[in-house]
Image (spheres, rainbow over the protein chains, first blue to last red):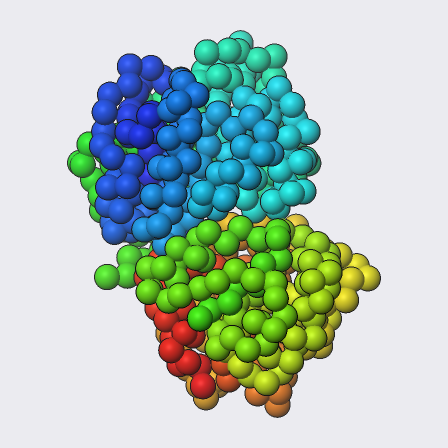
Length: 253
Length: 203
């Protein structure tokens, strides 16, 4: 049986891991390579590294970060943030990413999903969707949550699947960094509308939140604060999930 | 030296990093003579079936690869690399695989999420006489798979995994190991499997 996945997320700005609330007020949380090694040892099933840099200089540093992290990591690595073209994706894959997530650029130019999927395969084409509840709909946001689009997250997820995406990374802007749990109605709506694996993101503060996400159709859960703060290790989470009947990869010592 | 066949389409950084961690020297090549003479060869595979087969043929490597594998020389075929050992795939009708084994690769049904993306249990066939790996959990990223194991009379061993029913997640014989999963992304268990293959632990 396919296992539920626990995915720590590193938001990286200019070579350092940062963490914010609702995508703002970034504070330092450590070095990417140290945290990556740390989480792998704890039993992380995969790692997501998102580039939240604002400058071109910092973006170039990201390739180096990916190379360093890749060298030590024996689990899958997804990289995203600021990917604007197939060439950008190719550079990240060449630096050592196994999957590349695209967000704003795919909303601007949906053909980018088809192009990436054709060139590199569906299995490495992740469409990241940031959304918030607006007038009873899940409105897609781009550019780190600063721009609201006239696009519904549920319809966009279904379209991304048709265009060849292999996975959806679904982040709730309303819940990001708030520790109030994943946005379950949004998760349900998206997993019902699309048959791709969906990674739930934004709002996790407890194992109970993760259990809820899996019960609402998530294939994987992403979390940052809960792990960065050191209150729980990935292995702690997995042990508690097992008690609740959710099967994950067992940590090999 | 491990010669990794450069098919131009596969993302192989993770594989190279895994060999580096194991201290195993590798080289990327599409030179048929190197692939013929190397102690170890890897046929990686990511992307579409037709494109991968076309890359092998354009580089004139088909016979060299088939001969190595038929001779049981250390060769590791990953993901699409395993699928290419068969005759054909539903993914690319009409495209001729390497034809080493008489099988057709089929897509998972709509009863499950496709692609299969994540960790799943690999269980070696209990009748296998040569157990070089224990049951463990491996990382998969595939939409297509081999449904039925090779006839035992052919000497191929196999391991199975449950997703949309049981499918064949690995086959091995002499020095040849083919995995539908990615050992290079399968944590310590995957690293150990790679080490066994390098050490010739299959024979």
